[in-house]
Image (cartoon, rainbow, N blue to C red; front, side, top):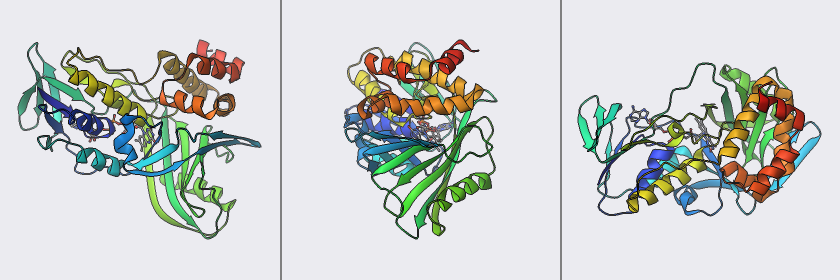
Length: 363
Ligand SMILES: Cc1cc2nc3c(=O)[nH]c(=O)nc-3n(C[C@H](O)[C@H](O)[C@H](O)COP(=O)(O)OP(=O)(O)OC[C@H]3O[C@@H](n4cnc5c(N)ncnc54)[C@H](O)[C@@H]3O)c2cc1C
C-alpha cells in the first residue's frame, strides 16, 4: 500500500513513525521546511505507548503542578502522569529514527490534493503522484479575529536558588497587565534555571518587548539578577478547526480538530490519534479519524473560551476552579481528552455556575 503523509510536524512525524512498524507499506512524507522553529511541547505522560517517541527525548518532567491567582494557590499531584516536555526539534528527530528505511522524505510543498475511487493524487510544484491513502496535516486556515494563545518565553539563569524544580507552574495570574487574560508559565529545571513565559489569550498579539517586560517584572519578585539564555515565542489559534475529508484523503493533527480550544494543548492528542490511525491501517479496516477528546470535553472547552472572550475576570476564576475541583489523576485525564463521566460531573459542579451557564447560553 502506498501512503503519503503531508507535513512532518507533530502529527505527520508521529504517524509516519507508527506506520513504519509494519513492513510492506510504502510511505512518502512531503515536508518543504528544512528546519522548524524550536519550542517545547508539554503533555501528561501516562505511560501510554503513543508517547514512546516523546518519552525517548523528554527534556524534563514534573510531579507537581501549581496554579496561582492572588492569594489562591492550587497544587496538583500528577506523579502518576508527570507533566513532561520535549523540544519540538528533538521530537521530530526521535520520530525520524523510527522511520522504515524505505520511507521517502520529499522536500516539496503540496499545492493540491484530489481523489477518485481508485487513488488519491498529491500535486506539488514539480509533479503529481498517486497514492492509496493520503494523510494531510497542513496547518488549517482560521477565521480572522480568532482568539489566540500568544506568548514569549525566556530561559533564565538566576543568580540565587529560587525555584522549586519539582513543581511546574502552569498558570500564575498574579501579574495584572492591561491584557485581560494573562498569566505566567514557569518550568523550572533546577533551583536556578527555568523557562518563564508570558502568555495572553486575545485575538491580537503584542510586540515582543511587551512580553519581555512582563517576564522581567515577574522575576524581580524572586531576585534582581538573572541571565537570559534563550528565547522562544509562538501563537496558537484557539479554534478547533476540522476540515472535510474524503475516503482516501484524511485530515490529521490540528487540521482534523485535535486542539483543545481552551488550553491550546494538542500534542498528546496528536500522538494518540496517530497511533490509533496506524492500528486501523494495519488492520485494513475502513478508516475513521479518531476524535481527540470526548464531545462533552469539546463543548466544555468552547464554553470556557467564550467566557474568556466575554468575561475574562470570571474566566480566570473558572480556570482556577479546574485544578481545585479535580485530583491529579482526573485532571490529567481531562487535559488529555478522555476523562470519566464522574470527573466531568465533579468539574461542572466545581466551576462557578452563573458565569458558565451564561457563557453556555451565549448571554
Ligand atoms: C509555539 C507552539 C507551542 C505549542 N505548545 C504546545 C504544548 O506545549 N502542548 C501541546 O499539547 N500543544 C502545543 N501546541 C499545539 C500543537 O501541539 C502544535 O501546534 C503541533 O505542532 C500541531 O501539530 P500538527 O502536526 O497538527 O501541525 P504542525 O506541527 O504545525 O505540522 C504541520 C506541518 O505541515 C508542514 N506544511 C505546511 N504547509 C505544507 C505544504 N504545503 N506541503 C507540505 N507540508 C506542509 C509544515 O511545515 C509543518 O511541518 C503548541 C503550538 C505552538 C505553535
